[in-house]
Image (cartoon, rainbow, N blue to C red; front, side, top):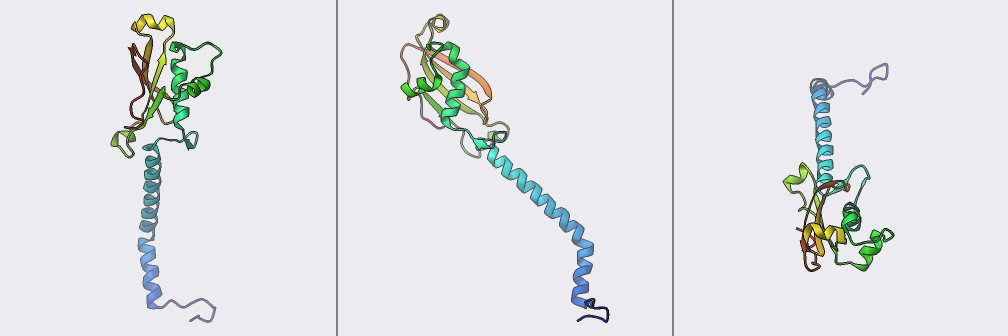
Length: 166
């Protein structure tokens, strides 16, 4: 029903809702904002714990992680200056492995670390350090390929990488 001016009349049902909206509306809007905010943070956190690289807006592939790790240890590998890392990977497909942490592990909330294992023949100058012709290098990388710690061990034979995942 409308009054003379064409404005809808407020009955008791509408009046009680408008009264409630005036009193609780602000609280309702704040609650919705808080839920949306924490929903966004949770979604972004979920992506971070699964290796999502936010600056590049994508996941990096295992091959990209291997090439990034190889670039950090190229000086120790028995490669000529003209050898490309991609061609080395093509001719030595079982040289390397990428291990990702389990999805939604609590440690991933702090820092998502991917471990890349590289097995390669060393340059003669590097052999004097380990006294072994081959080397297994472990390189920890962030989701976007930033370098963490590196460690490794020499060996008399070329090893095959361990399992691909944890």
